[in-house]
Length: 105
Image 1 (cartoon, rainbow, N blue to C red):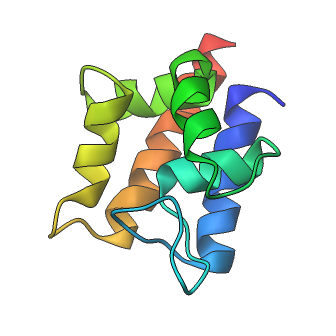
Image 2 (image 1 turned 120 degrees about the vertical axis):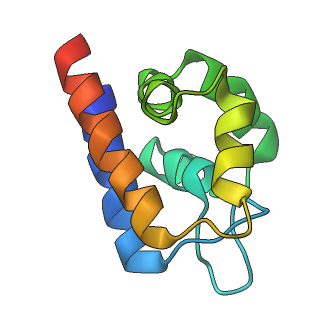
């Protein structure tokens, strides 16, 4: 899958399963951005080791980092975990990142 395709799948997963903060997934099976990335790329949602090692090599995560304007993947997760962050803001970020990923390919 291309980075843009991964981002589209992440968006679809968040609409289907719901979005959460402070963990890759939760008891309701909702996903954070990285959990959605895991599932979109064929990993288990809660596979923390694979998730954190893969995120540094992922074009989709790179596009998200650029879209949010932060310095790296870890800052992206701090952004999404902010207490006043909304689902709509997360979806807007995915939309912006998809455009960045499409331009890069």
